[in-house]
Length: 83
Length: 124
Image 1 (cartoon, rainbow over the protein chains, first blue to last red):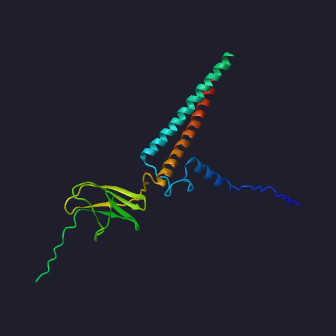
Image 2 (image 1 turned 180 degrees about the horizontal axis):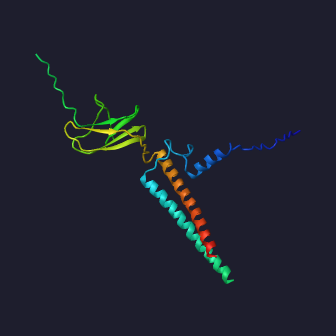
Image 3 (image 1 turned 45 degrees about the vertical axis):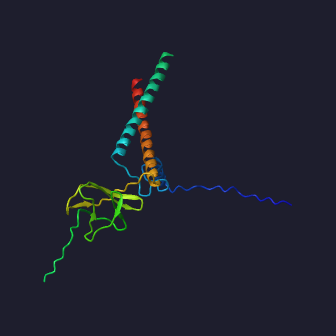
């Protein structure tokens, strides 16, 4: 006689500890706060060149975001106008 | 009879103020020990690099100018840890900085997107 044992699904609800923990995890995910699991042992060390790179990266993002959406939007508007 | 003790000159040295316990001092990559007065000897007549380390981590680095005779150069220790290239910490540090830069790029692109949508809506 085979014994079949039904095990109820171990459905677990992950408790995220509230908004503060979620926000903290989000900051760590974006890199604004050091994540001890993946980051270096004494925290992230930045120098002047890194700050310049961060500013350049932000400006590049703004430029790419603006130009791509604006040009695409103009194209769509013109197509709709000429329809 | 007077006792005259001839003390050999200590030579050129660098004194580090505020150096923490448990660290090692390297001059031009070679570990050196402090003399009795707490100063570390440096080569004569040439500029040197002073490093304070704990294990693999470089906690502090300074340039010592060329010294002659019994000159002593004073340096104040200010912890500014650096990770040595090739170590796991260095790789993680670079990865974390790259992650931050990419996040800033993404946030910038969202800002650019919002500005473009605003301009397009004014354009009609």
